[in-house]
Amino acid sequence: MATSAAVSAPPPTGARALVLRLCNGDEVARLITLVFASSILLVTIALVYELWVTSALARHKFGFGFLTSSMWDPVTGQFGALPFIYGTVITSVIALLIAVPLGVGAAIFLSELAPARLSSTFTFFIELLAAVPSVIYGVLAMFTLVPLMRDYVDPFLKKTLGFLPIFSGTIFGYGYLTAGAILAIMTLPFIVSISREALLEVPVEQREAALALGATRWESTWQAVVPWARLGIFGSIFLALARALGETMAVTMVIGNDPSIHASLFAPGYAIAAVIANEFTEATGDLYLQSLVGLGLVLFLLTIVINALARLLIIATTRRGSAHP
Image (cartoon, rainbow, N blue to C red; front, side, top):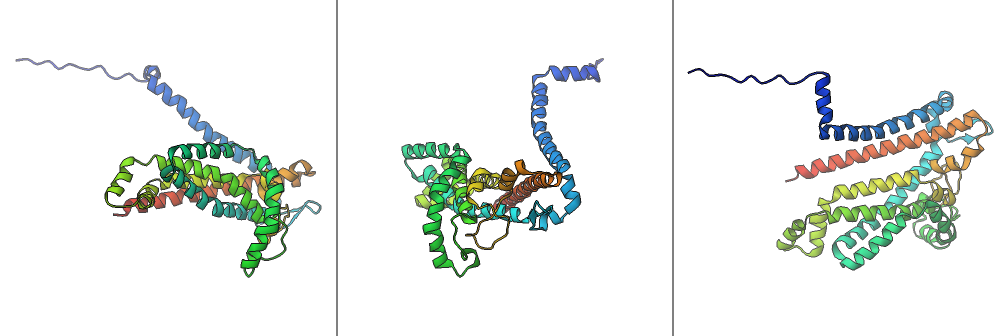
C-alpha cells in the first residue's frame, strides 16, 4: 500500500517574512510599545550626556576634588560640591526618619483598621496634599514651621539631647532639621497613598487564614498582611526618597542657604537643588555656570546610586523572605 507524505511549504523568508509579521497585530503592538519603552532609556542617556558635556570645564579643572572640596567661592573661582551633597543627604535622611513611621502607620490604619467611609475621606485629603505645589509648602513653612521649630521644638531637643553634637549649637529656626521636617510633610502623602494601595492588594484569604488560626486583628495585620505588601511599602519609601533628594523650592526657603558643613542639625546649610535654583541665573563665568551644571550631574548620579542600592535591598529582602521556610 503506497503512502504519500504531504510536503509542507517552506516558511517565508526575507522581506516577505517581515511583511507577514508586520501584518500581525501583536507584532505591531510589540514594536510600538518597544519604541515607547526605549524612549525612556534614550531620555536618561541624553540627560546624562548633556550634563556631562556641559560640566566639562569644571570636571577638567577640579577632577574628583570637586566632590570632596568644601570650598564654594565664585570670586576666586573655587568650587566644591561636598557641602551641598551633605545637606541633601542629611535633609533626606531626616525626612525619611520622620515620614516613614508616620506614613506606614497611617497606611496600616487606613487599609486595615479604619471604617471604609473614614478611610475614603482621609485618602482624599492625602491625595490632595500630594498635589500641593512645593512653593506653597515653603511659604507655609516660613510662617508656621520655622517659628515652631525655633521657639519650641529646637529648644526642647537642645534641653533634653543637647549632649549630642547634632542637637547642640545656636538655634536659628532655619536649618537642616527644619528642611528635613518640611520634606517629611511633603513626602508623607506618597508613602501613605502607595503603601495603602499595596496593603489593599493583599488577598483577603491571607487575613482570614491568620484569623482562623487564632490571631488577633493586629497580629493578622502585622504578621500576615504587612510582610506580604513589603515590596509595595519599600517602593513608596524610595519614591519618597527620590522626591526628597530633588526637592528645590521648599528646601531653599527654610534650610538657611549656608555653603558650609555643620554637625548640628540646628545650623543652616545648603542642598544641591537649592544652590542651583538660587545661583544659576547669577552665574557670570563659564566655570561658575559649569560648576552648577556639575552639581546637577552629581545630584543625578546620587539619585541613581541611592535607587540602585534600594533595588538591591528589595532583591535581598525578597530572596531572604522566599528562602525562609
